[in-house]
Length: 191
Image (tube, rainbow, N blue to C red):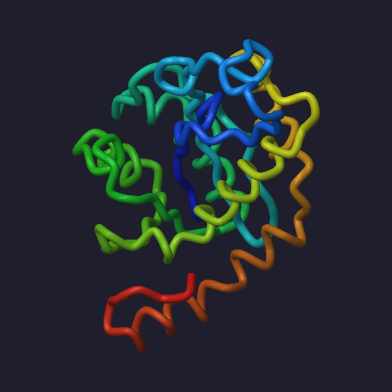
């Protein structure tokens, strides 16, 4: 099971918007938009993928401590999936993942963990590409989410609509990803 958290902004922070206007309309109110501080806020989510499916998307409210990671993610979502499917668990090196209490919980619950995970290798985790797909799907929605609650709902709806074939394709690419990293001697790959 490949897992990760990702943050999604209500508004992109690059500030670019395409506006068609006539000469001398540069500061006409209809041609301007007010930018929201900090992108209007964000929604943090956690998810996991396997060759057999996706976990439910979990919204993470506030700071994800090791205790919350265990109670809100590992115990209800990871443990049952790992035990039912006989999987190995992959998580990155986030502080909540590396905490002693987390490692103890995984050990006590017989959760095999893929170790060591390279500290700077997002190109190895196939769920990173799923986050990109999820973001593109939410950005294509019309109308766009205008509130954090709408963004959260859109993320959950689009996550549920991502096909199992797309997930299988990403999980199935792991052998090629690892081979590419080995061939590049740990440097950048096309993934």
